[in-house]
Image (cartoon, rainbow, N blue to C red; front, side, top):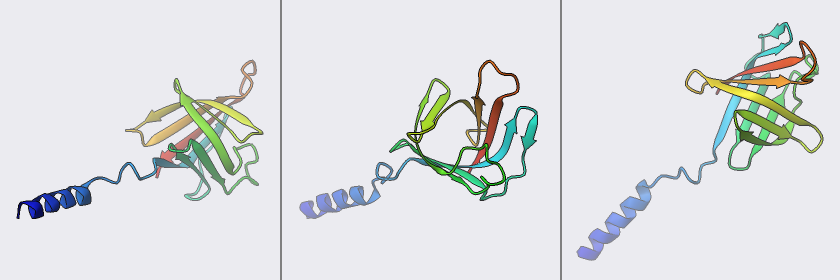
Length: 132
């Protein structure tokens, strides 16, 4: 009987243990706003632009379904990324992007600040996202 209780307890412990370590650490964000200098675009649909960050593999997947309408935005593709000192850097072995970032509203809103040419005026781009 004692062996049965130990086996039952071990089985119950294993059955109730969290699979969190096996679940990928993934965040999906939907673009809701883009600003390039004084120009603001905030009419993006739910499926227009999504960014998926996989923190286990450090891979960012960009789905840009409106690149023909907005060719200046980051194109669809996969990018390796790093977060460091409130900045993100990502690249696809061809292009390298760097931006400062801000999380707000209990980490539900993400804003990326790109300064494309530091010496230029009105070259900043701002990407606004909401977490899905």
